[in-house]
Length: 302
Image (cartoon, rainbow, N blue to C red; front, side, top):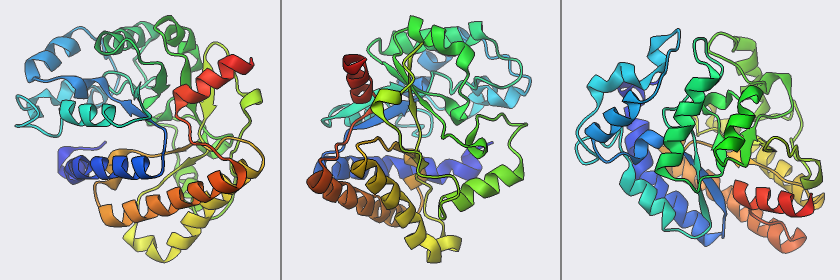
């Protein structure tokens, strides 16, 4: 589990990295979906507590519930920049072509022991109360639960991000993520073990909601693996090129707090990717789209 002690630096660093990521997105005309945890919208501890009181989060492992860590929460964003981010959300909203999606309200784990559909539905209700125009969902920890898709549709969610088509990327819980899968996912970031995971608009699953698969997680810079950075960059560029040449989609994603440490190295790496996207735009008419853009096109062609 992440704690303020072992991950606080990343969270604070993200507050500096996000405006610079947005500057790059503006420079290269990038459409992006920001899947935001609903708790971050709250402007005060009182508001946060009130909303959490209305949720049932009966995980077998109590540490998964944000209710177990409320003693760490300050009064507002000024006092506590770790648990509140309303000003950052406003910053993102102000930039063209940035979609605000959801990462659930409470960072809800859809496959962990103890939780049930009715608990997820309450969480999603809390999201809609914050922003009823949200249409895209990213499941926390990629715990895609197909049984919950009709609930998503009921509350206006039209698309979700799925996982790559490989057994090493299948949705997992805290108990079903063995070391071999973690090792293979790491190797796959540098060497092509599982393919590029590009996909076609015409083959996207449309029901109950649109399934926009992941192609690649943009891993953060790792000093211990710095000598392999060129392989990591080539892996992503090759995937983007394959997608552009074949008129397919390539879905790259990451967490902003991944850029909270080694920020300069991570931003340099991101810009190298975006430069390549710019090249592919000119050569193959490759286009940047966020999840709502994709969903809108799928609806038109279906």
